Length: 235
Image 1 (spheres, rainbow, N blue to C red):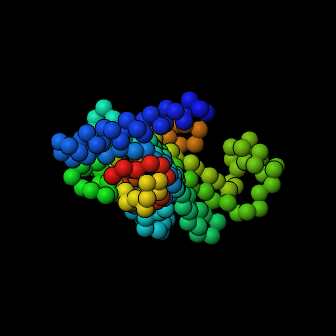
Image 2 (tube, helix red, strand yellow):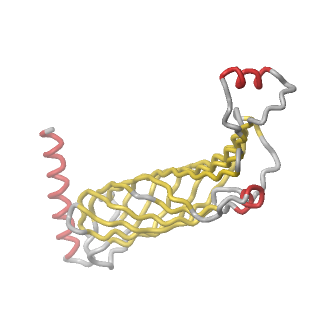
């Protein structure tokens, strides 16, 4: 613990020295590190699901978090990570559709040095994510024997059915975040971005390939995030 405290103190003092020397020749390089809780409002295109099931196409709230630290060898550059997950469902009688989206990855941001007292940072998220679409019909009267009878009887006409489709992909998301510090240790973050997905792969049930999935059903979407970060800020 003493070593950690000494190391943190050394980093803190060196950062102050660096900032003071930088102020003599131009903009002060921003520095710090932080992490926190960042709910995300994400707006995927669900029109394909809506046309088949009257699914609400409004956006959805996802929960997650993230963090970052400035890398002192490149002024105003910070690296970190983030992750999120959210779900929603719609029911019509015994039929139900559930939609889950999640992802995360490495964050790369550059804080604009000419803006004082707050941190305005364009950046990128590089990572991966997935969509899970679960379609089910369940009368609510299942027993243990019903489950295994349906499984073993190929000619079963059961009214209970579940299909789970999964879409996995890579993510590249341009972002713009603003961090507004209340003091040196607490800041409010608000930001936005657009999630672009690549190399998508759809599977169904136990990882079986499925074809014919509409191309509009993907993870591309705008998102807005806001939350509180705790750490050390020198903007």
